[in-house]
Amino acid sequence: MKICTAEYLVSATGPKNYPPESVPEIAFAGRSNVGKSSMINTLLNRRSLVRTSSTPGRTQMLNFFDINGTFLLVDLPGYGFAKVPVGVKKEWGPMVRTFLQTRTTLAAVVMLFDIRRIPRTEDLQLLDWLEEFGIATIPVVTKIDKVSRNQRAAHLKAIAEATGLDREAFSIFSSLNREGFDDLWERIEVALEPPAEDTTPPAEPAGEDD
Image 1 (tube, one colour):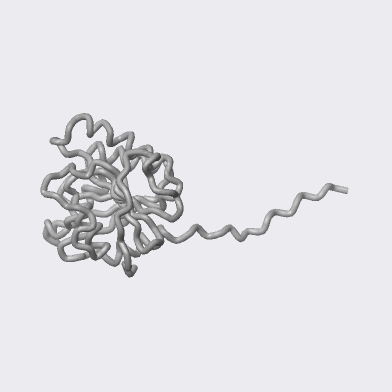
Image 2 (tube, helix red, strand yellow):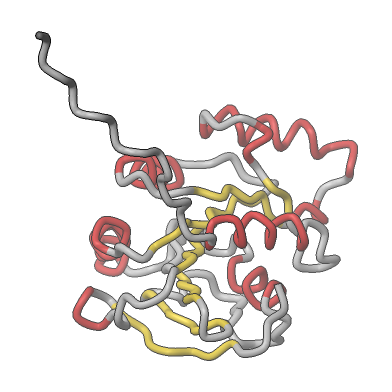
């Protein structure tokens, strides 16, 4: 996909602050420090559209961005960082769950997993919510440049087993060398395609027996 424009719209904590539901949306979710901001900037060919920080847990609201005027990208708040205040941790669940449950224009969620980390309770909870609400999920293993190619298979297998997803369901990605860039964009573009219309003709009404 060619990115012509990428503009920040609004940050929100609840439905009253969401932008109007007019175009499809792709949300990005993952644990704090999983590389989410770097991934988004890389995908959009921008240096700092989404703020990156050496301090995890800084993204504590839902941030909406208009991409090409054709779809919205939603940066969901990170979770799992120990130093985030308890009150903020408690807000994450209701904030994200409300968005997932109520946003009718949400086409898919790109869910990130650090290749060096085994998924934890929050990761599995989010996967459960996505399944509960029937939301298309694009699981991506990030920071693959942090392990050798010989180690990848073992790490990917461990993540797949922890999540209960097939290994083939995962894409891989590196913001450092852009590996996986084209594959991930292809999956996002498929998710953005409008659902195919049902062209099956209506069944003929059953006739009465003579």
